[in-house]
Length: 303
Image (cartoon, rainbow, N blue to C red; front, side):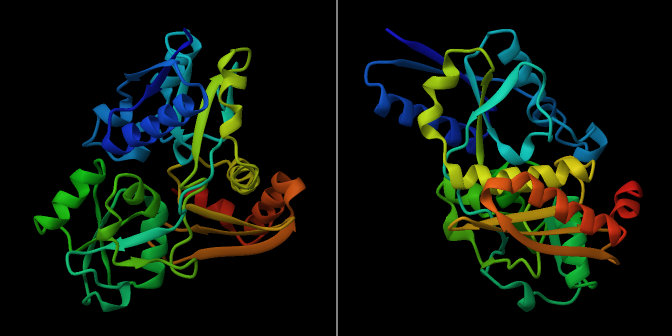
């Protein structure tokens, strides 16, 4: 009997994602045995420390990737937005399934829209990217640093610690909490994180598991994420800096919109270009160069 071990974080969302992959593997290969192994990362352990202060890069993936390299697990399921632009030597993203909704959403107790929030409303988020764009849109808002898994943040909202949250639509939908969404935020307000909504199934380059999961790969998602991650790499950023990027595939064409903001929201660089899906990474680099010409490098250096 074929046995495969999946490494995953232990949050409700991470387990929902890993269980989805497990179910697809069993559907494709009836009779296989699939084990889920929970691995606690530094980002999970140090929940009272802002993510940028933890080093930003790989805080939710490092320990899982180390277990993968040691052969303790056969594959890892990540949120692609948690992965730094470059993977550790010897590892590869063997498949990216079809992307879930990449947008950011506003969550309030009364399902209000952003425009309906009162002056000085408190919004909870641990994301510098969201902070920068929200403050650029509305200078009156009070942005409160709020970390924790999806359920923890929703509980803090319901307790009245903040008046609203900005969260990823994908996470809420994957754990069955889409009913909490009050408004889907347009790109003009908040461009989502690089690779938001996409899953990455990671294996060793030479592992048999690489081909075992290949059937889950979605080419459209790969093109969008390739453009977004190429932009992130060119800008020298990681998943915690105030960079937003959203690729949209339409036929053979790919459109990419991206922003870089200052932490206080006073400045925001924006670029939008289109290209061929077959040269997605090149499109990402072209958009990055345009942002750098606008002064994005100086803003990123100041973070």
